[in-house]
Image (cartoon, rainbow, N blue to C red):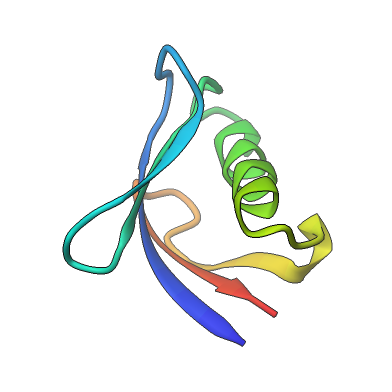
Length: 73
């Protein structure tokens, strides 16, 4: 089980994952932060990035914040 600090940038022009020097990730998603669509896009993008199933990735803290703690099982 791994926990990651993630900074989400919604409504980006392109979806991508960028590693920062401090060991956390910046996740750019095209989805707006409305009705959980942003969180769904983050989970989908991280699943692709790490090669894990979407069901194994959960938002532990920061459901309504740009700063999130993500757990990958």
